[in-house]
Length: 114
Length: 110
Image (cartoon, rainbow over all chains, first blue to last red; front, top):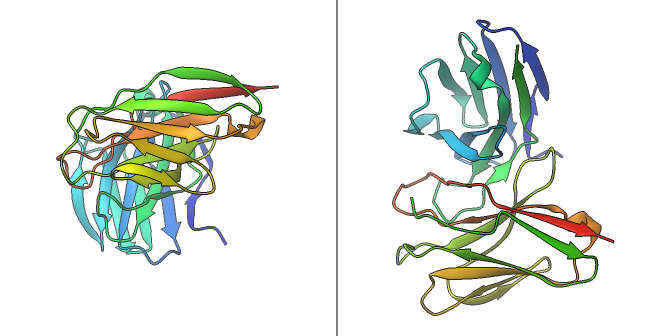
């Protein structure tokens, strides 16, 4: 069974479009995260949701909006896509969101904006 | 966030022991040190975590000196499948945020 899953795996789209990436975890965790890994391989936190409540937003443009319908899902909606949004986006989850907890990552969504 | 510094890349032959050292001079008193592994085209995966002295599991060992300003991840007898990026993480002051940085890219060759 896949612990953290993301869809789609690949996403190619034009500038200016709006797209969504979905994430689901079946681990019963309370906290979920979105990370962005750019072409230089830096992996940076974007958002964290704890039991459906946003708890961090690391200076991400407001074109990015996380939506959590329940604690097992954290979707990422991106408006007006730009070339610089091309990256790999990883979803992750952890039990309670404590710093020392293990985070479990999904396989990533490779977004290419043309 | 507590800043970590680790080598950008390392090379090794199969069967050798690999030690990757990470410096974290500003580590907070209650911070744990965590290492993740990322294979190409996959998400990071937890390897090991420690607070002080030595921790060992089925994958690796983690050595942390008394001052905790550095840590060393030890991979015994690496194989080709250990080729990956290894990240050293120390949370620092920012509650839930984890900054993975660039990590150490390990290449294992025959």
